[in-house]
Structure formats: structure tokens, C-alpha cells
Image 1 (tube, rainbow, N blue to C red):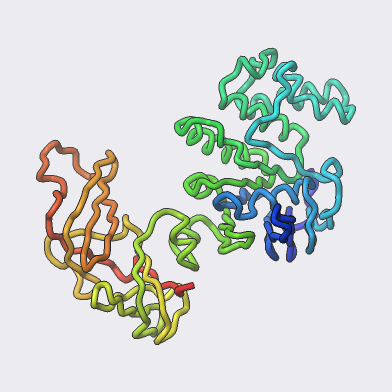
Image 2: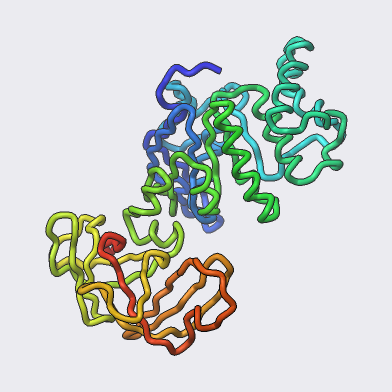
Length: 372
């Protein structure tokens, strides 16, 4: 594995156009620019049809861009066949050879390259140890669990030591508990081998858990790119705030915008709400106030002079670690997540339907975004 550039993969103004059954054209990837650094765990996140898998397939060489260029280690490879690219792909279906043992599955690519037998044995042994499958070399895929088969598929891709490993929702077929365990394992393996991982997922928590950086995609475009904490704590649009995690939204008009804060008049509350001006809005502009459910504080009496509103509890859901409280005021419904910090069976320790409470929206935890 050789690294000659700061970036493992670059997409420069890439467009991928498909013909629809109706005879029109669709830009599945629409003028995308993306720079993926060497050695990072990079995720493309979005719902079905957002262009993430098409972007990955173009990196792999299974699709060629209609416009723009794809660079791998600074070399233009947009129209280079897959087998000539220093990348490997792990699919959701695993695509293991059922008639071959685990050893044979992993060794297959090296054998096709006519690597020396001793080298194959050494490299397969090393990769089996890394994915914690040592001692299972003689088993067949059907004799393994879903998680073990996923690790075999990963080992088969890693044993060739590609510059870039492309992963197309590889944990999608696993149950929730195993999926969470494999997220941690996958990140640990990536850190061990130091290879660039480009990961496609529609699971927000999965992307936040594993990634060094995330590209949030919608309708063929990159909406925001950044570290997990940046994308979650400072979304640049309502779409990103809504897609990553959950949020409460209030529509209004900007009354003040000075320094890092802005004040928005919200008709539904007949009041102004102050928050961080992360959307770069100006006075008179329509805006959206966004506040995460876990960042709202509930109290019997107002805890703030501003951004404090009294509402009524309409429903509560106890989910163990948290209680989800739903509150209505002025026709506006709020979601509030409160961590259960005490262990109690006393019903008085929890909120009840019909209870009147103050919602405290701390300005430093409240974001003002542009409407569009």
C-alpha cells in the first residue's frame, strides 16, 4: 500500500446521469466535490436515492461519471476498470464463495495474483487474527454466524491491502445488537490497518459512531461535510438538523442579528427566541429555530428570563435510560428527552400528562438557521 497524496479519493465536480423509464434524465450525483483524506474513516450518509451508493460505485469503477473526474491517490481514474484501481469493496450481501472454506475465501484474491504460497499463508493468518477468526480456517460460510461472515468478507478485502476500502452498508443484514458490536469492531480494525475506509450508510447513529468525517447527502448533492460533532451540533440547514438525530423546529422572522446570536420572532409562541446565528441570517429574513430534544431543560418555574415558555405535558414515554416528554404550547408541539438520573418506582418522580412545565431553551443550545 503506497500513499502519494494527502487525499486517498477526490471527486471533482462529479455528475452521474441516468435515463429514467419515462425518457427523462436524472442526476443521481449532481456536481459533487469530495476530498477524502488518507487513513480516515469517511461516511456518506443519506436516505435511499440520495446518491451515496452511486458515488461509491463510481469510486469502485462499477459506474463511470457522466461529467467530472475521480482521483485515487492523485491519479485520474474515473474511466479506469475496477481491477486496475487500488481499491476493494465489501458488500452488504458478503458475496462469499459457499463451496470454499474461510481460508480459501480470504486467499482467493492473492491466489489470482499468483502470490507465493508462503506469503499467502502469512497474510491470511495475520488478517484472520485481526478479525478474530483464528482457528476457523476450515469452516465454510454456512457454518458461521452473520457477524462472522461479515468479518470474513472484510478480511477477504483487507488481505490485499488496498489503498481504499469501500463499504456498501456491510452491517445492514445484522440484527441491532450485533450491528452495534460490529460498528466498534470495524472502527478498531480500521485504526489498526490504517487504510482509508469509505462507508455508505443510511443509519445516522452508525455514521456518528464510526466516522472521522461525514458527508450528508440529499438528491445527489452534499448538504454538509464535517466531523460528527460538527454535523450534529452545528448543522448548516434544516435538512441536516432534521436528518441527523431529532430536533424541534420553530418558524419565524429575524428581529435582531448581532455578533454570534440572533433573535427570531416566532408567531406560534408570540415571542422572540434567541439562539446562535449558525445560519448567517440577517434582520427581516425568514428563519428556522432548531433545538435538540435533549438540550431543552424542564422546570416547575422559569429558569431563564428569555427563551422560557410554559406548556402542558401531552404524553410521556419511559424508555429506560431516558424519558421522552411531549409538550404542547400555542399549538406547537415539543419533544424533550430527559435522562433518568435516579432509580425510582415512585410515579411522582416522573412527569405526568396534564402537568404544566416551563421549557427553558438555553440560547447557546438553540440554533438559528436559514429557512431554505
